[in-house]
Structures are given as structure tokens and as C-alpha cells.
Image (cartoon, rainbow, N blue to C red; front, side, top):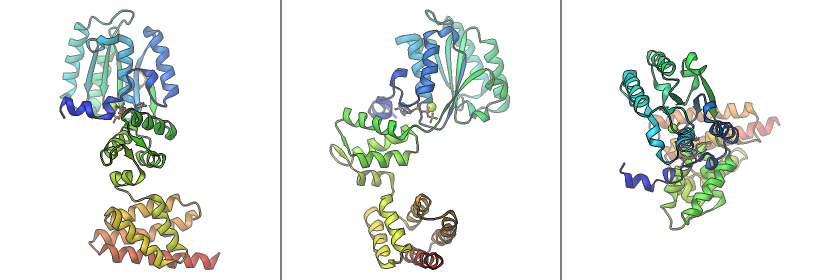
Length: 332
Ligand SMILES: Nc1ncnc2c1ncn2[C@@H]1O[C@H](COP(=O)(O)OP(=O)(O)OP(=O)(O)O)[C@@H](O)[C@H]1O
Ligand SMILES: [Mg+2]
């Protein structure tokens, strides 16, 4: 990707520059701000959690806040999975602490941000632990990873660990609206809702979906466009189809099925996957009923992977739903 293309990426354009702009992570932000007020107290940090929730962002905010505009001179950014082995890390850390004059102003250390640290092998981690010990007077580490359990215990115990979990839906929606407004795009509420549902707490994913959707239609992002972009049928429509089948209106269910296939161009397998997901959201079915229905779905999913005709198999699946619906109707 060229610099220009990167500038056009909203995820980069709207990446927070300081901790106050970070979305949702109130407790984490408060603790980090306390370290910023008195940098000497900052221990090594570990940021662990799912993708797209602000780990790298928070680490870069810390660099900005500690060192100001010249932060790059005092911050070493390494990617554990890119670097060729721990020896490179060791050399670069050593060189870096030599030239960074171990700190700036009232910050008596340089910052080393090690991304994807859970990709390091056991021996590399043992070596890293030693590097952390020998350079601890002059450097602070921020280790970033998805799973803290993949990091050896002696390193974990040297760090203050912060866990980044799925971001709050409401906070994500507000942030998407903020970006849309800045970009002069009208983001309809139900479209924002779909993006946030689909992104499962990953804000990077959500912003990328918003940007892609905004390219379809001038100035507005509606639900239909979002569903096209994320490659899913409307959950409401899928549920409508399932309900009609279960409650005895097979012909209507089949009609809805053709509507879904026609308007989005899905394969049979994709629709089956979405049916499965909606079933588990339906509060009018008991867990036992959901399990029975899953069994039925499993069989048709298999047939479709074997190359059976999508229309016929989906119709047959809906017919099975109708039969199942009738059987629960009789026992109730
Ligand atoms: N909490 C947040 N507040 C504001 N923006 C965020 C937040 N989390 C993610 N973003 C947005 O998503 C982009 C990616 O976030 P970031 O690089 O911090 O994710 P990450 O947690 O490091 O993910 P990964 O585990 O994949 O490295 C940012 O550039 C920013 O636009
Ligand atoms: Mg990251």
C-alpha cells in the first residue's frame, strides 16, 4: 500500500492521537493516564485482546503523550513476527537504548513497542525476558498480543497486564456516526446497527465496512448497502423465512428464500450459515429445539458441500422445518 492510499484509509485517518480520543476503554485509559501524569511510575505494559480494539493505538498514544512531537526518536516499534529472530530484537534494542539517550525530559526511559509478541517462540521469549531485565533502567516495554496465555509467566509477571475486550456497541455506533459526519456521509441508524453487529466488537472491522459501504452510493450509507458489503442477507428477512417455515407456511417461506437468493446472489451454503446463526438468536425456541434444528441444518449443509443443487436443497430444508414445526405444535 502506498502512503497515499494509507492516507485514504479511514482507520488510519481517524486513529486517535491521544488517550482522550480512545473509544470506550474507560478503565484502561484512566490507568494509563495516571502513568502519564507521573511517567517514572510506569511499569512494563502488556496489552492483550482481540483484534481492532485499540491496543496498537493505545501504545502509540502513550508514545505521543510521553515524548510529544518527537516521539519517534524515543520509540522503537518492532513486530515480533516480522523480525528475523530474537537476535535482531536484541541488537535493535541495544542500539536503540544507546542512541535514544534513555529518555526525554522527565521521562527517564525510551519506549519499545513489541507487537504480536505472542508469535515469539519459547526460547525467543526467554531471551526477551533477559533483554527486559538488562535494559530495564533505560527502557520500558509495551508488549502487544492477542492471547496473554501464550506469553511465558516470567514476562507476564514483569508487566502490568491490560485486557482489551470487545468494544461497546453503543460507543462503536457513536464513533461511526462521528466519522460519517466528518466525511459528509449520512449513516442511517439501522445501517450502523448492522455494521456493529457484524463487527463483533472490532472497531477496525467496523470502520472498514463503513468506508467500503460509503463508496457504493453518494453521500448515504443505508442498510441494504451494508448488507451487500458484508455479504449477508437481512437478519430480519432470514428470520421471517425460518418462522414462516416453522409455523406452517411453506410456500411463503420458499418465496422469501428466492427473494433472498435473488437480491443478494448468495450461494446455498451462505444462506444455510445465516439460517444457523439466526436460529440461535430466536428466543421462541427452546435449547432442545435449537439442537434438533441444528441437526437438520447440518445434513443440508453437508449435501450442499457435496455439490447438490442449492434451490432444491434449501426448499427441502424449509420443508424439514415445516415438518419439525408441526411436530412441536402437536406436542405443545
Ligand atoms: N478503542 C478505540 N478507539 C478508537 N479507535 C479505535 C479503537 N480501537 C480500534 N480503533 C480503530 O481501529 C484501528 C485499528 O486499531 P488498533 O490498530 O489499535 O487495533 P489493535 O487492537 O492493535 O488490533 P490488532 O490486534 O489487530 O493489532 C485504529 O486505527 C482506529 O481507527
Ligand atoms: Mg495492533
